[in-house]
Image 1 (spheres, rainbow, N blue to C red):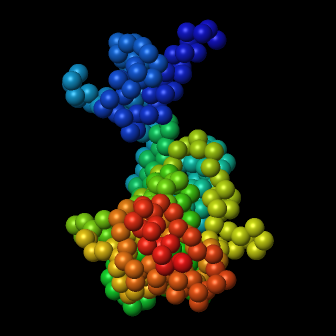
Image 2: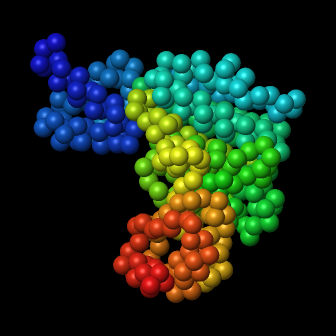
Image 3: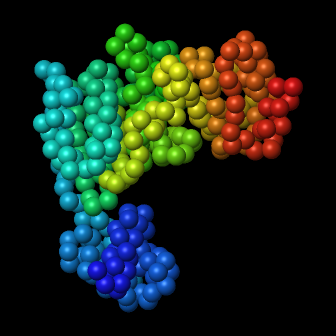
Length: 341
């Protein structure tokens, strides 16, 4: 392979891997990356369009590039009589993914069957739709049911304050409304093995990105009905299920022993985290873990009572647990250290 040809393939590989997030300015970014002219980049873009790898939209000034889907599908299922998630996976989903690397295929097998089983066991709906798209670099899937809604279901069955409170407990892991048949680990681990994971249900939107402890929660216009789950992952990631599970399991007993609690989810609007009641809601069910890490990213300040309830009162009563915190600013850290002293 000539040096010029190899460089050209490197440029096109960069374009393919970055087009998803930079479709409107990929020409400038590529030119800056390789110190080549925009005209040279445009030749590579044109080649990728001609080969069917990219789609081009808009005129010269407002041109946007995107990956051309290699495969798409839109499936719909009636939930009565009951269908099984492994059958749907084997017959309708796996054939479209079997050429992916084994580790990525395994992630999709786990994530799809966990989320589809949740629909079957918990949604109380009558239909479920699956929307699927695969490109040269990533695969994404949405699973949408018309049931009661996941956060509303948890709120009602566990007697919680509202849907946001349900989301806070869900984000910790080990939450289920059917403990006889479920461990409550499915959504926690599924949200952490994919590059991007989102749930939209009722008036709450939840989002998690791989490698980031922070979970985003937004109030938004209410979803018509049911629950929508969206998952996306790069087709060539080196990530494995074992690598992710190992981050949260013990070395000796292999149980789900560690969790990261996103403290920000306990805030409502402009409310400050100042009271013991707020702290107790945050602490609900964390005694099921041996190691608890409180993530204070996005939290500007906390009150003395809030800090004292977590880092002195609860810590003293549960001395066998390991409590720690991350991403606390100086004001939050000062209040925590005061409570611990």
